[in-house]
Image (cartoon, rainbow, N blue to C red; front, side, top):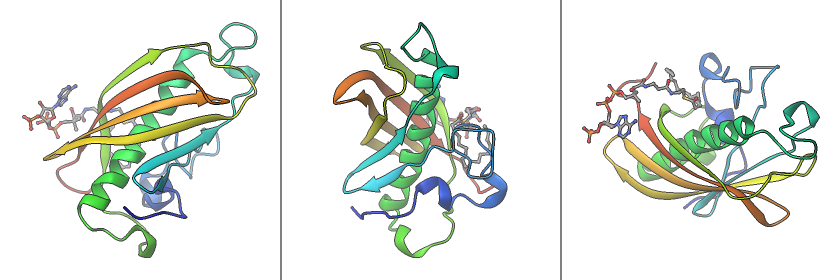
Length: 157
Ligand SMILES: CCCCCCCC/C=C\CCCCCCCC(=O)SCCNC(=O)CCNC(=O)[C@H](O)C(C)(C)COP(=O)(O)OP(=O)(O)OC[C@H]1O[C@@H](n2cnc3c(N)ncnc32)[C@H](O)[C@@H]1OP(=O)(O)O
């Protein structure tokens, strides 16, 4: 697979780049960036105290939303690779993936103020269905795992 210097979300067309979790055009959102590196995807996010569950730990909704957006971004990246779309030489991608199903397992408290690392691995692509397995780690400790089923929309919107 290709390496990618530009985040997959930065290849979404401007009119579809307002997602609260990952839209580059949403100044109020997280603006998560998912990069394809080898055959994996990677993203980073450092939560601050507004995302508190208990003092010192991150609330689960943030963890789930990071996995959601990293999952759809990863699915879009893996779908592009499968379709021989050259991510290095395109301004926007023609693939639109949305979440159909997201499973999150919380393995350990997610610490506040520490850079979180999300890793995605393609499990399979079957027609429009793309399954991605993910981990969310802090300082090398897995705090959560995620499984997403993303669906490639039938036509571009
Ligand atoms: C939200 C709408 C956005 C529209 C514009 C999108 C542009 C995207 C561009 C850039 C992305 C930027 C945004 C990032 C987003 C970040 C992540 C989110 O938060 S996404 C928001 C949360 N997700 C939803 O709101 C989806 C709501 N659901 C739907 O719209 C439909 O249900 C959809 C598209 C997921 C599927 O509908 P069908 O009509 O296209 O296809 P069918 O035939 O129902 O399903 C296809 C296959 O998938 C299986 N499937 C569907 N849902 C499943 C499920 N929950 N579990 C297991 N299988 C499921 C079905 O059984 C079927 O399988 P078989 O082909 O028969 O083998």
